[in-house]
Length: 483
Image 1 (cartoon, rainbow, N blue to C red):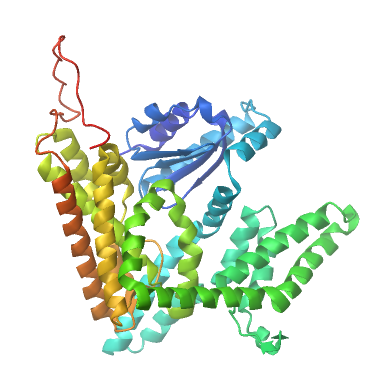
Image 2 (cartoon, helix red, strand yellow):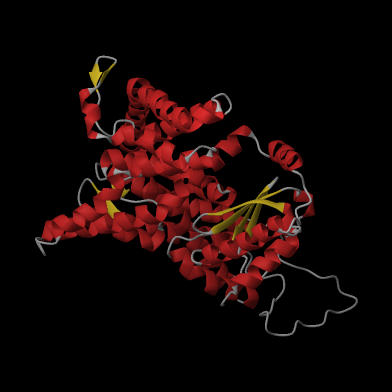
């Protein structure tokens, strides 16, 4: 169904208390993320009924509206235009102090930290996907010997962004934490500058890229603290000269003689832990990761794993965690298929599944989560069981010595195939990943089939048909929330 971005934006803001009630507007690949000044003014029930809204996650002042890939960008722009227009015309009735007080009360330190880290990395995902696919294509050309004249150029295009990823992380970090973005990028660039090989810290010669995105994140965050410290203390006449100089110099030296070494140690530990986890307890690790990931997606906390994925990609060329986590989507698809077959008289629910299933197969799970499994209750748990089984399947092969990884972050489901890699080559990685998907589909389907009743308690009808008139003497029934 085609969704008009302007009308969707208007309807969303209407149910959130109007543009004046919105204090920040961002988005990720599938969700419009808003911060509200007064969460009590929002109408969650009405918001969920807006055409095009696939789900709503409310956490105090932080609201996430699931719209799906592609749609979310255009709707976000329309929402941003309306919010900014409201600010310009003076329609905002909530003072800055009140907004800040509400934000503090409705955000715990952990949630705020995870959300802000996600805001640093989410804008980088499109480039990570594009470069990851190009890297995979370059690897295929190199292994097959096709187009030898094009392969070096393709490899260069695919690798350039990853080589400078720390700079982009630094830019976004400074922007997110209230600093000057280009100064954050300048300090983070120290991490990847080839000249660091001439520097010795703690008796060890540094290497370019040591610490990776974690070092860049820490360096740029420190730069924002130093810059804000200087802004309030340096005379205005000297601010333009001294503040940028001190902001680059002090965090730059601390990065060289402390942060790179520390972040490098942490990054190495992350890589070693991931390898140990899969080679030693692969099946159990896959079961837990695949089984719990849907809950993280539902809460919007899955974005906090991006720094770990990026660290593994920089270290090993691929992240071994993403294929395991992707199995949660396979369990979700299997559960939805079981609901479709089992509740064959529920035509409205079957229509929802038909429209959401293609996105689910491509790894976008929110439409099925919020439209099917979560409202029914038990199918959400059985979908988690399917994800756990698929994760255990891939983890078991890791214990046997064959690891499956992804060269970029973002896609899952069938969309992850072009980004697969591993220590035994693309063919082995694709075969094991496909086996994991089939396992997730099968277990998710069977577990949901057994958990559901043989027929729906009542028959729903498609939205375009007029609903039947209820018997005045009969109490209405519906699908139980604890199904």
